[in-house]
Image (cartoon, rainbow, N blue to C red; front, side, top):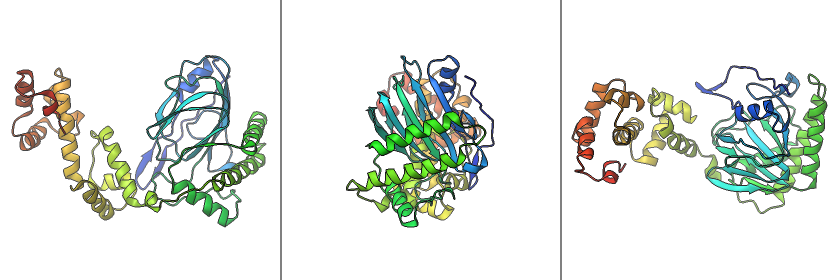
Length: 348
């Protein structure tokens, strides 16, 4: 089966560019005929192209693995809210630090900011469905905007949105209505020809959402408004900063990435860390440089400086000496001369 993938301009919001997940391990597995796959998609998601009749829907489809698999989808985020459903089999799944094994009728929901992976590392065998809807948000505090063809009554849509935004539960046992809905989704995905089933897809997604609302309402859901406060978006950004310390950060760029204004970002950063944003960034960069100096002795001082986001090795040395009261070379030499225990050297 040939998978149609198009290179589309990534999503950009408030000056921040978000790249779509391309699902390359899945694409490779399909090319090797490891499983059956069928999807309708847009942007860089694999599958036949969706039409403008379903704008806001980024991907909808399923895979059916009936033999042992040798691949998985590593940690990633999506450009919208993703609804997963496992009809049969078992599948290792992780989301926001929670590891679980999905079993038949498992329903999971990921918000755009929630990192997740499928497989550990293999996906296992089973029939797995998904729907990804782009609601125009990337951070918890941002207002959700559903596609205009979502026809739930305002009160129902408001209730569904509130439950999904203001609690952190990720896994439910679906009922027969949700299972039947996904089975019907697979039928319309299988038979769609250049958007011929767009109306059916829209109807089924609306039915799926009201069925999910009924499921959520059947539980005693506790809402937490703190989950949609802008401080949480800043905290998520700070949690992710370790992976992007080499980027050319300014306060403005950090605020945009967190999805909040400059003043609010600075306020939340100071409250959460007791440091100004640039001071926090500098301490994190120095902390990374200390680890690299000891763990990668073959790297030059210049290479470490650039890896940690410093513009020049001279500036790196100046900042490092101010923080550690010695130069980077002296710091490395102290360790290899065994004058200071390793744990003490990299304590931040």
